[in-house]
Image (tube, rainbow over all chains, first blue to last red; front, top):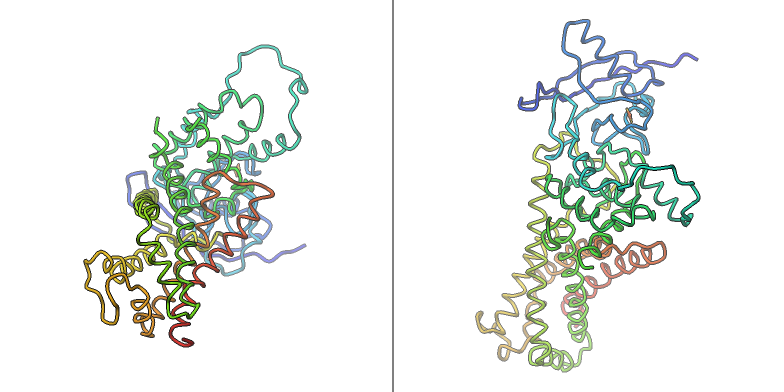
Length: 251
Length: 220
Ligand code: FES
């Protein structure tokens, strides 16, 4: 089936390096298939730039199937663009209309400095994980999967929280650039399971304190994170994080 | 490692607890104010005021009340300034995310309530303390009844009062449920109840306060 190509105006944030002053540059792209993804559209733009011996637009990506969490982009005022439950690599161009103007910005947060163009440094998330987002297990034989009984409800909640791919859309969407949804997902998926309970107290305290040091904002229960999370992580996890943290500090 | 009161969650916890305490206080305050509606020449209202200004327990609670206000305001400013700093470069295109609307304007509605509080202090509390002169028409610095009537007989004052109450409603609408979320109270069964109570509270309480000037102005 022949589908009509889209002609679009892109306003893309270009920034030479972390120190440079960036600005929006306007590009026109022609005859974009509505069936291609947002990143493929950017690939096509970059090809035309390379042909003209211009620097291509830098953006993060890896798996291009919504599982790695590398892609980002703040598209027309929404992280991962105008669709819910998808990452930018899964965003279809059919979500746009012919003649649209699209603003493409990097994640904006003090804790996520821009490295170049649309690429930001998200290693702050790694630092939070290093502070406690793990379980300490000695190596040995693989235990039987059914050796430890787990309530189905808890297993489901833990799996939902474990879907977090650490893309940072929650921070990007939050008016306070707070990382609470990310940290709450990471704390929750471990706190809900017996294996994670052992270090639960130390974990939640260490991760929250690291999060605070890294310059993320404070949660105001606005819920933008939940609305924009490509994995649809719920803010009930944030309540659980609060609970874990308060109980741990008081207990 | 940070301690409870200066961690991000701890600050919010303090704000939330102080806020819930203030919510409880508002109910008491409203209860006394509504006595004006009895139209008994202010007898019941005077008794209420008498009790509130002389009872020793209330005097002690008053210290906690000011503490609650102070804690809530200081933490709110602290948290808000940190939040602004967390995003030094803002987006060119404004955020279209689906969010709880009033949560975005808590600092603004908070400032509105703060301004109202100053006005309120000048009109009543400072008069009681003798810092501000007793207004005309009132028989002494404890005659809140006539002070209220004098103020509310003025349509400009009354309508400004109503507008302030709308600001309070907007603030409370997010505040109540948000405090419970901050406390970590999120539950399949109880959260919908909390949300309902919060919404009802945010409408009923400011409406209760706003009814009084309307009554004094147009019905009494
Ligand atoms: S590129 Fe892997 S999630 Fe988008």
